[in-house]
Image 1 (tube, rainbow, N blue to C red):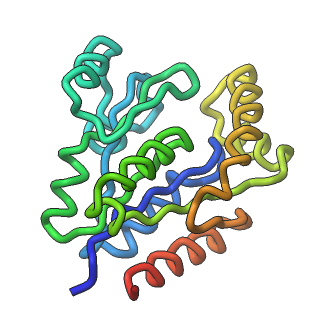
Image 2: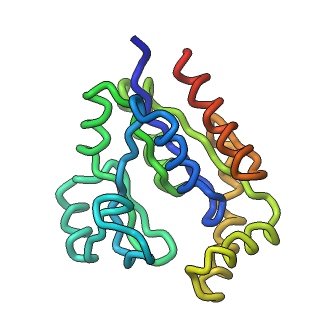
Image 3: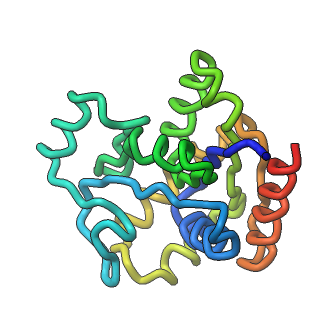
Length: 195
């Protein structure tokens, strides 16, 4: 039986990582379970509690941080995000691959935890979705129609910092089309499952 994986996907806002994670889960429904992240940000149109995120107030989130509930947590674009350790363990214990969409801070924390946890180290697979062209990134963020211009400016500026961390990941996908990016992520998944 192949090992259960903890697949950590990162990339700047607008890189398509949320869509890619959804497609990878849909393409492998008997193998992969997406870990639903908690956040203090407000739901966007069409997002549902317990499906897209667990939406918490800042005091609720901070109480869970104090209780040691999260695998990792970070402040990103002014909001707190973090996956619960129990949600990750639940999937891995059941023999499923757990898929996490986290920022570069969260991925760094998880990698560091892997140095002290043999099970985590054996399961961990990291992939970064790189959008090197800031003009393309801005076009994608603007096309979403979900953020005001000042937020888009902040996300593009943050992306330039996040790109500096791409080399810390086991796999880097140079973002092109949605289909090409998905095929690349699926290939990484199959490669890691075969090891």
